[in-house]
Image (tube, rainbow, N blue to C red):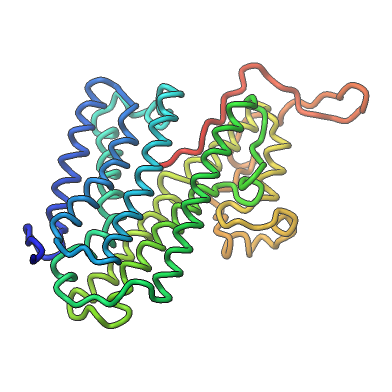
Length: 341
């Protein structure tokens, strides 16, 4: 049976309409009720809906299509489940404290979430579209497919394990503790690194038909163009809603509250911001390599002299050892979980 043509040959319009309608529905609930518990659920479940809709309309259920569709669904189910569980435990999302009461800033977040879902879904959307499935497809299992499966497995494992490690650490330690164990000993954001790997892996598998010459013409160009999805995700995590909202603000809060700043700074100095790397080597690495190869951009770095008007944390002498340590304060803020989009 031929694939159904809905609005266009690439399913771009139908997936955009579904995404806008779905996100606006949840926005109306969230803004009216000042309710945070469905925000991340709305984003993650939207991926699942787009994957199911496009594979259902396709009517061409070849192995490569099924694999990338199931990979996207599996990733979205895991992410949605974890974030929904976490918000049920925490009760609210601190990201919205400054915008929850403001219509347009709050709507801006939901528009960004629409772009995130629709754009990151592009490799699966286009692969399932009539423009691509009308071409004969080669058998699944090429070298590119295998590399994609390996990358996806590594990325999903890193996301899952790091989220669990961070949640368990925060459950057992107070706000002064620095989560520098497990994957967080080699990366300050291993969950983000895993997420990036997952979506480049999905793209690698999806583009295989074009790369091996089985899809031609505009469909060939369209499949390659879906690399916009993983690149857009990487851009968001690096500069918009991920690392940029975590690095300098958390360091500033630690410093100004005297909340184990020295321990936190040591972790910052020794640990790669994104790409996993041995801390013993990263600590000695030249700054130029940290800023370029390892993506630790200046916008992430907290310099007390430039970014804070607060005095240095008070230091007292520890009993028995005579070594200066930071004094702790009872009103030190919780650093919170790593915020995902």
